[in-house]
Image 1 (cartoon, rainbow, N blue to C red):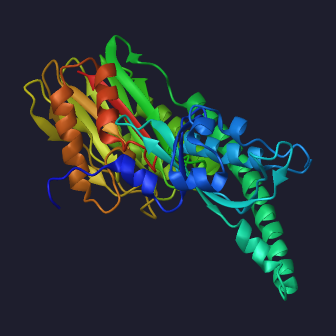
Image 2: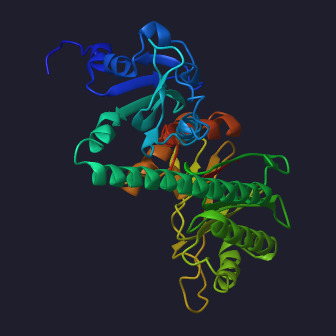
Image 3: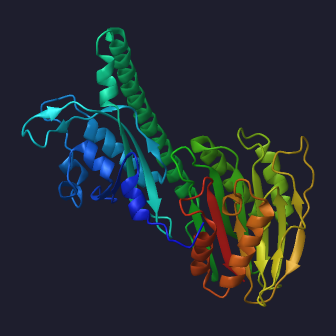
Length: 409
């Protein structure tokens, strides 16, 4: 391509289909020439005005649901950051040159988000295909049977849309319950004793993707010690959240009486063996001894914690890795390892939603995490946690839950 800049405003106006841009509060920001032509409106009649001020429901049709359906679709796009294709809609339009008269029209809309650099939805792309003439043509000479089939198709499309809306509400309710359960179980404490720590939990994008990620920080008996753990339950929804709660509580209790993290994971593995849904769950546990400046750790199939030393050197704690919980039919002692640190070091534990991406090697995500932690390691744990999430999570949100714990040593 040559150095001539693309006139994207000109491209937008020349698009062959009907396309409009809406602000998050559903005001028209722009509309291309085809949209204005087919809708029978001038630019002055649309730009800067609310969507439903320009195109309200037909007051003569008590069954009209166009506004309700369109607003629900646009709200979903704003809430989820995902594209939403609507079923065939009847949405009558007022005749601009004949006040009080409404024209029966049929549309096939698709709504999509536009993000800013921070991943926030700043515009909505409202693309519409009008199919009124197609439906009318079905009713021409010899088209009686086709007209009946078209009407049936429209009816089925409406029924499918209503069913999808009920399913969305049901899934949204399940998501709310699962998030409430996770929020109640996940400790909101930013400190354990006088030690500085930051915790973050980010649910996956989409109503169906609430998962079972969790974290825990506990005071340990004997000496100036704390236990920090992060885990991930396979699955989605309330079931995964329930299993998460059981495993987190069991590990929290085990850490308080175990000699080390490996023994705590041995106990948790035995418990997981009798918990439905705990198959292939992963967890990493660390015991931090502030008096001796040591970290003892053990992992059951979980991504390795990252230790950023005071001099900026990055160490992955990957010398005590074992298969996930419930991987062995009989209890097998798990390995553990010990590393040392100096004052000012930073320890980060996380779940795979932070580093894994589709069609990308896991080592790439781990390197990205290490680089982010190293560049921001002098910041307070709260600011450091926010910086890491901002840099590593996709702009539109991750498709998997993410838990992150950062402790300043």
